[in-house]
Length: 272
Image 1 (cartoon, rainbow, N blue to C red):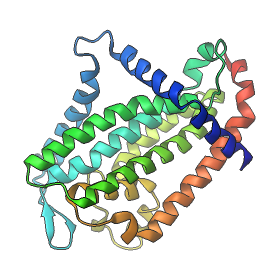
Image 2 (spheres, helix red, strand yellow):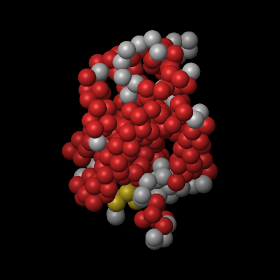
Image 3 (tube, one colour):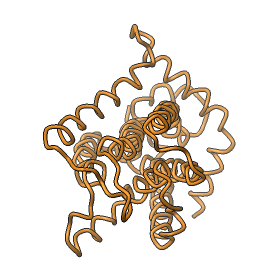
């Protein structure tokens, strides 16, 4: 518990530094490209079009029933979940290798190592905000107009941020000690795409398998995003039991991640 409070305090005290370095990192990453930071948007758009072509056009996917009596085209249903998946995947991957790829820099600078995963996450967060804006415009043009339910997107963005940071604290520490952890995480997340309700609905599964699959916290966030975009319900209120489970899991991951991070970070420079 003490380690978690210390880590959270470090994030608050160095919030300005996190924002400044995350912007610098995003710009430096794309400075050699002719299209610059536009590639941060182009890449996920290409992925969305590929998945839509394969799962929507070739297989002739029917409209998706998001709530009883309300069906939407597959491409809009896919977009509502994939915009979240892109942020989660990229942030988790970048966060997991954030410390060991910056060890030389950290040996010469004086700020807490716990802010490093957050810098990587924030650099992806800016891209996510742009993608959210593009998705919002597409939904308006397509006739899915904004409603008061869209306000809950703020809650689910924050929930995603907390989940990714908690995971990154664990994986960035373990990846610094054992580099294979990052490769294993990358392979696991690619598999997780097909075990999450991004490309297909869990309702096609029989019980108890569909309930077991909801142990995945991504289900909660993805369905929350779709509820916000389509204006179907206050998801985090109507499914309050799931909300309690999600935040309980985040707290456990944060406590675990903070403990191992604080315990091993003084030895990180030894892994150079």
